[in-house]
Amino acid sequence: MSDKNKAILIGICTDNRIHEEKKASLQELQKLADTAGVETVGRRIQNRESPDKRFYAGKGFLAEIIREMSEKNAGLLIFDNELSPSQGRNIEQEFEISVTDRTEVILKIFQEHAQTKEARLQVRLAELQYQLPRLKRLWGHLDRVKGQATGSSGTARGMGEKQIEVDKRLIRIEISRLKREIAKIYRQKETQRKQREKIRKVCLVGYTNAGKSTLFNQLTQAGVLVEDKLFATLDTTTRKLELDKGRDMIISDTVGFIANLPHHLVASFRATLKDVVDADLLLHVVDASDENFSKNRQEVLQVLEQIGADEIDQVLILNKMDITDKVILNSLLKTYPDSITVSAARGEKMEELLETIDARLHEARKRVLFIPHQKQRILSHLYELGKIVEMEYEEKGVKITAVLNKEDLPEFEKYIISPGLKSDSK
Image 1 (cartoon, one colour):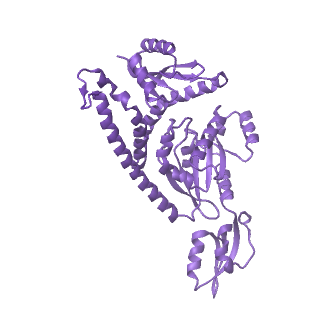
Image 2 (tube, rainbow, N blue to C red):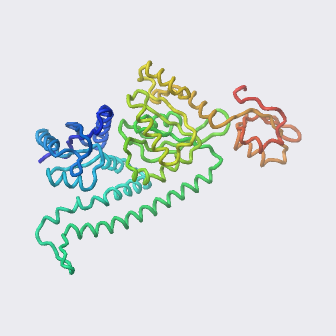
Image 3 (cartoon, rainbow, N blue to C red):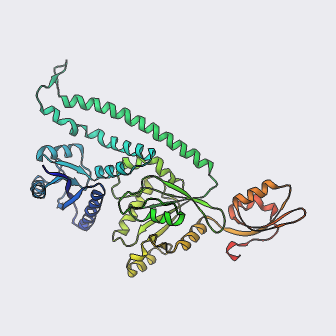
């Protein structure tokens, strides 16, 4: 029996000008397969004007692949493109093999990596939405057995057809339940957001495996699991980010994006991606050593646009500077002059990054204030919003030197007794 943990990967290229791009896509699919526990024993690309309506690839081309699969004891065929329900069914019936596509592999990885209730609900919803139109493929074999039932109208209705109707109804019920559960989580997040409206929020985004979680750990010492696998992070992790001046903020690490990320998967993760949409600043982390840097960056920008986060202020983080060719790195810095180079793995340039984050979110200045003793509420508020540099107790009150953000100055304007200096002048 063929080993279903061994697979041959197939891609269809309809334009010779993007042949190299298709090769890169198949390499990424191999990483996805590896993360899903499937060994790749071959990669093939067919050049054709358009996908075949019945089999997506050409029938003759598929016959060659089947022979190769037999020789290599491979039991699974994985398409780089998403197959229609009928195409997957036609291939399995015609060639008697197991077939899947990029979307199903991604869903399998998400299922294995989902740790929290929220992530499991979101992955399950995406799976059911993917499976619903494909039920005929799952149950079609029942129509090939003897004993088809005949309805009262005289129309023959197969066992598979009846099973599909039952399953569709059950799946739709389950989809509705999951959507209600996720909507509840979404409302809870919205409540939490309103409770911390005055706290500035930073969010890490980027292509999967760009090094977001490693950078998050360097900035927060959170100890988030870091693996050299795609989609190692599914659940959003949030921590307080402490700065040297001004008000502290919170920073979140989010799920990585990838090319051809299924739309229903993005929709299912609406609650998780809420942290991205609500951010005041996005740190767009890219792997500067990746030859597909530009394409991966564009994929992330497309997803951000899809979820309505494309207008949020961004800082481009060129990660893995320690393993990136210097000529390439200098070229990227010329192309993106406002970007920052870091090595998350080595913890290099973290101070510069923190200063940039603070500068983008706050204009902090040093002020000298006098707070009367009877205004203890104002003093408490000052502790919450500012950084106290020096205190001097006097007969009628407290003279305080503090670093305050520009947006907070109006609350303390009547207590300021000296003009402000930039906080880094201290």
